[in-house]
Image (tube, rainbow, N blue to C red; front, side):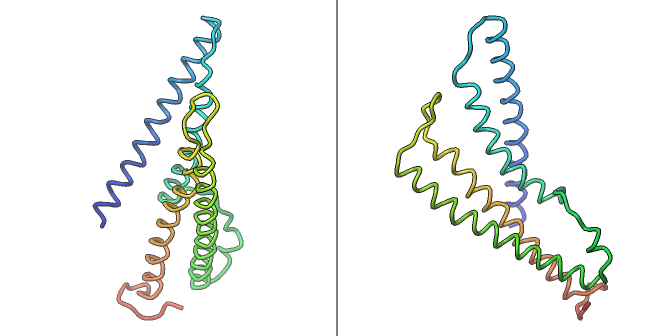
Length: 168
């Protein structure tokens, strides 16, 4: 399982890096075409926008994995350590509910986009590829939060020595 997670993590990082490179190249070509050749590419802005949407969701997953999301913990730090741990678990559960909501309604909306056979204006690709970013990105983040919840719950019951017992 750890091998599979490691492979996914690498794929996610590669996608984010190479899609950023692709975005820069497409925007650079668009600038060259517009200002030097006096001609514009009709599809470039749309492609960059759709890549960016996927980057946001997978980037949020990466940010969650490396614990780089913005957090206001000024008041939490004033609580006793045991209360901080319990509050941390409650926050993870709340986030899991939120991402579950996004997964459910994201897939429902994706189904309606597929049923309507919607396509993008310039690229003429199915918009389902773009709208799939919401439920898929939310699913990846939710899976990471489930793993974090299990890890923190195990640590809470293991106690400070790591041998078990209650740390509350």
